[in-house]
Image (cartoon, rainbow, N blue to C red):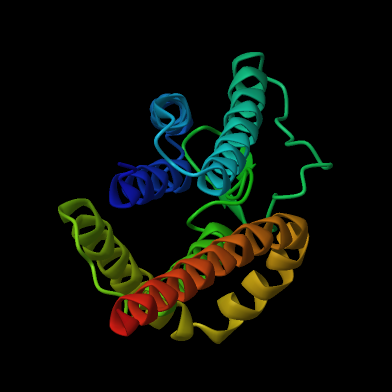
Length: 214
């Protein structure tokens, strides 16, 4: 089963390393995250819709690693590092640190710049709503619901932190426009999941009505 909490914590740790100018450590964490994504994809137990979302998150992590490696390599050659301008997920904040150069805080979209946070919030909100009122019959489903509720609580706590700084929120809103294409793709995935849930519920109702008629 996919461990949402572990993935969230690893992404957050990698982003914190970037803010501390520990770029090599951030790359190491993202590489470990890629391995986890590969294991999830190879496992084959999850639905195709969910696997598609995992592949999308993996692609974002690969972009992150590539951009970080550009900065690290240019640092080693004493060049002025400059991240790709054509990256759709780069944000506008900058951090100057002990590396002796100015590096963009958002090499691509991540937990810190709020884009993954927004995407996860939309997915979890709809999953939580869909699961309300549906009886959980297996231990695996109970574990999944516990993970969803825990991660949903963490995201709400991040919302409170963001709300304390209105200027930062406005900046995040502008940056999120650059990832609308990604969000649209994930929204489509969520809609498919929603339709699937509705089909399951209707199927369960029909079976119950047939049993009641016997």
